[in-house]
Length: 493
Image 1: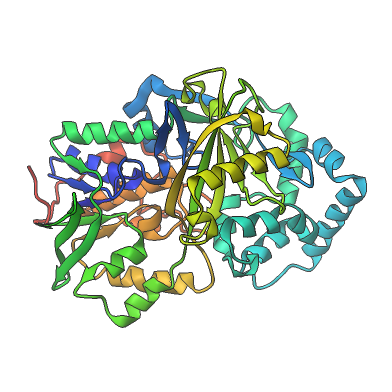
Image 2: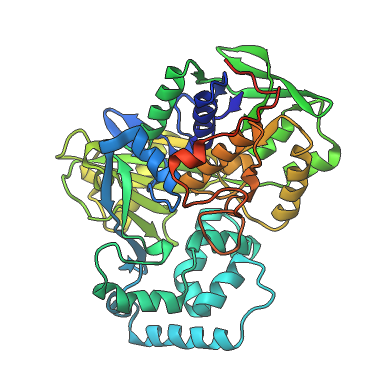
């Protein structure tokens, strides 16, 4: 049994099916892909956030190619920051940044950076600490603080340094400055810093195309992906998950299981256990937080609007966090080339005023805010739709590490349960990381030495856990080849 048809769950199910293991995948949503899905409205396709396909893991890259082949496009990356009524290149470019900020402010940023190098914050605990130590107070307050708090809904002092380390990916003011000077002398694609990659792969019809291909392969293996089938309970006894209850068509069905890979939100998994987990475990699960997300997709009667794939909106006067231009990800995301489809991203908490706002009011809000930052004439917005995504982002707030460690230790007491994926492990992973956790979860159930928890665990961003977890240089055949040791818990066809 695999719970969840996102990148981790589908990869795990496909690998198990490849080993002739009978698998049932249960997905609560109406489509596959999780947060990496592609939604469709009147022929217009849009992501739930933009999803670049870039990885240092050779096997994952090969697997993407095997699934979609020539359907994978190579796309240029272009993104900018909207701040203080001005547009800034991202990654930063010296001339553009100085022109936008002004010479005096630019000098102040450099002096602020120099000061913090002599007086670093120790210990480095929060997002604020981490960013200030690498950029200085002035740049932190200019480009990081307001936007990050808009995204997460909590002060930067309450966000763990681990999130910054994994998402900003080794970038500092000094490394950014070096890139400004060196990049023009490199060949195309020569940028070294992971945040500054200038090209990426992208499916012709959006990321959901990849996960639909996985689901089709799983069906060809004789296994099944059941949509609109949320798991409501996991029954366990003597350290084993014995059965799962899921809801489909208003009816709750119980099915016995030999083994389970769960990618459902970890807090939800613990809450679904019957008999209930110990109080201390349930309290640890309650301490995990999530940030929810919604996309307002607007159709604009205009062929070209701006060249960016996406734009970060740092303006505190609008609630809008980021804008995707899906036509610039792939022209075929838009069925009518005289139109443009924009994805306006709002970060929220389930149940707050944004989340509960009607679709019509959200479309009106998005249209108004696009006009406020000068990106669109409201009269040209001719249609729109809204997609809400609960628990889109696991939050790295204070206390989450202790809670996560307690939950990891408890879940590892189950001999036939493996966790994988962004929400399954409560780790802010990319698609490639999620896929690797799914591979490792499947290999662990097949009796191999593999641990999904070891993926992306270091403070500095990189594409692998330790060598025992997986070798990123392995090719697809080597990574997916399983050893003959197969525990009795796995039901082979």
